[in-house]
Image (tube, rainbow, N blue to C red; front, side):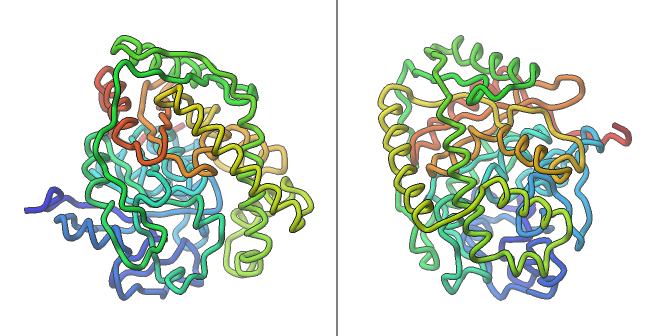
Amino acid sequence: MGPLFGVPISVKVNIDVKGSATTEGVRGLARGVADADSPHIRLLRNAGAIPIGRTNMPDFGLRYHTDNALYGATINPWNPALTPGGSSGGDAVAVATGMVPLGIGNDFGGSIRYPAQCCGVCGLRPSRGRIASSTSATSQGSISHSLSAMAVQGPLARRVDDLRTALRVMSGFDPRDPTWVPAPLAATTVKPLRIALITDPAGLGVDDSVQAGVTRAAAILETHGAVIEAIDSSSLRESAYLWLEMVATDLQQLFLAGINELASDGARTFVSELIRLNGEESLERYVRALARINGIAQSWGESFQVYDAVLGPVSSRNPFPVGFDVAGGDSARSVLESQVLTVTANLLGLPSVAVPVAVTGGIPQAVQIIGPSFHEARILDLAELVEGEVGSITPIDPKANG
């Protein structure tokens, strides 16, 4: 029997499941039934997993809140007045409420880790190239640079060890993805570990409960022998806006017409605000941004010669009220700037795991641990130490009132 024999899983609706529609959350794709599984779904099936349902997402994954005109809104089971996160919000809720023990989503700008924070579950964004990816929409090479460089497939679960099992299964070769890397999964943990601590990413402000969660996780790791050192994170704001430049330019050049035609009002509004925040684009600006990203990647590589991992918040703010992200330019900027550490991992292709650390005021708190490329084993080991003290805070019976 395979390691996931008989395990029911949920699968986000932008991933191919043979015989099921890959809708991306939009009405215009409601009949787009896949004739083959995406690579990692094939591997999960081979390991014995059973896809039992498709999970909701915002149109094309282009919001930090899960809602669309095809399926409607996904509800945060802790507080229905707050977002469940996005874009893998459906999987996070399915896992948090006990529908499935394992959800399969993807992460372009925090789309696994932010819903994990909002719903109180664990979520892993693997390294760029770790998990082969292909869907019917992109199988002929029609994929943007930002998607190719920054979006990855990954699991959500209630326990860290389940993420580890899913990662092992999902990491196999598939010829449909030319960017797949045959990197080993062996642990490379060296003790004592040195952890770079970020409590207020880029100094843009952090909610007290979020900061308290990061401080608690640092204290837990310290009791296990880790050396914790606070570092300057001021450069993260530049990284976040470089992520925005890549995403907004690709959206404007490649997808805007299709999005305007197919997406619901919420997705169109949020995309428009991202493009407006990015400002006037040019080829020269885009090329300079690519060069700058390379320089930032080199800097992080050098930092990982000193530190074994980075510990910080997922979002520096608690889950926002439903509708906040599309309330105007200031709201869109606030949402982006709350995710500066999270989108930096996407920009650089780094692995990152979100793990619950507390429940404060009825809302789950989480931290993320970022490591060097292809060192998922290390960050999962650290996340497991935090989980060992905190425990699992789900499944949860959905709350009827905020």
